Length: 450
Image (tube, one colour):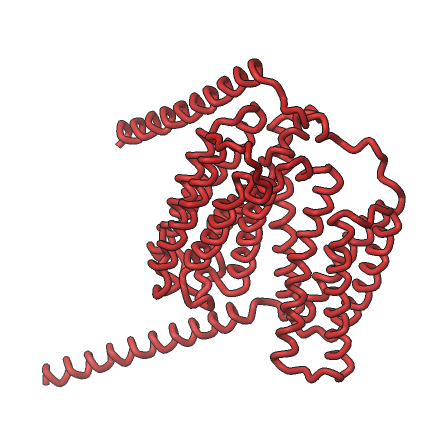
């Protein structure tokens, strides 16, 4: 046994050594490319803005963060929990958000995309507030349709708030503005899909249980649908699909990214076909295999800049960890470590984190952001820690929101409480049936003896 354990340890050490050597070769190759090559002509454009942030923009950021990140999501959770004071959170959040949008327009630059997006956010806020007032005052009948409409608008508010944050950062850093719109859209759209998917899985696991039986199909079905959408976006956006000129030529980067989009699209179709009629416990490894294959491709994927190669390496490593941890989760679930309606086990949060991290690394590896890092003298380790910190903040934020829902709805999730009572009744009935069965056997034995 000792020799077997030592052999396994030596194999693991050899595997780690091979991985570290591969990473060193990737870094060394990137350094040679940096020494022999030069930065693009538009590289000096991507830097921290010389114009200082005005007081109006600072007030806009503070008020919008308070309204859209704290008060309005809390109001949505109170509405889902049927709390009687949810209207107060909605009105106060709407008022603060309105003031924040006004201060953003006072800052000027009304012609950019971020300022125009404020009109959409304002209209969505007005619709949400009007629906809430109608439900509170009785002008709108409080039935399932009206409550569902309000909750859907509130969920859209969260997604649109996230999009607004992205647009604000892009506008402030002058990203996606030098003829690479297609590549920028591809990175941000696919990365956002992974982050939103991770958040949805986190919330569903905590609310519905470890297996998420309420989805009526395996989780991989919905991951495959997301892969189809992400693959379609990647297929048509990597080679400047939106800004094509006669002089554009295909590079190895364009070809690899486009083929990755095709593989995600085809693999997603296969995953949908294999899981569309399966039970939620019948998990499928196809999305995990796609994650691993894409991660290996990104780890070995070379760019013309060292920083770009390193950021793609981080994205590939996160995808490989996501695929391996998901396969481990599927194996443990198939072995019966977690029942259908149990609370999610701790190991189930590992794939969720790596999905969020892979989305964050994918968004952060676009060309314009890499040039900004080079001009700002930010190394890849610092950049990776910043993005991982964002991932932890996102998971913490939605974990707290679910805890708030449980606190407002009751001391414990109603589903788990009912299931525990049902399990107690089942155990009691099984004990009673066992006793009756043993009594019948003893009576038969005594009769036979007589």
